[in-house]
Image 1 (cartoon, rainbow, N blue to C red):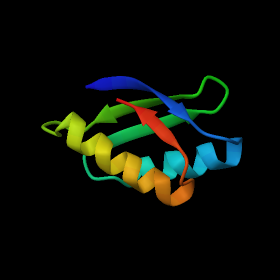
Image 2: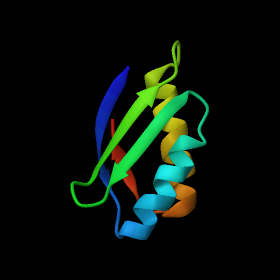
Image 3: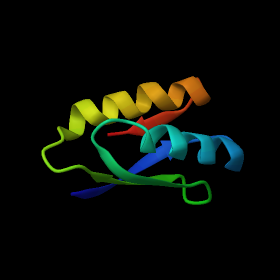
Length: 72
């Protein structure tokens, strides 16, 4: 399943670091962050729980930029 999320990220470098953090999260098949549109496109692994996986993605992204936000 693929889904798009509105994110809040301050710079292109942070967006790249957040993308890396999201891609390392269990349950994520692939993630791409677009700084210009402030969106994250996520493809989940089969059987992954969307809500709990995205909570972990947000937690991992906050390690990169503590004031980031993902609307889910």
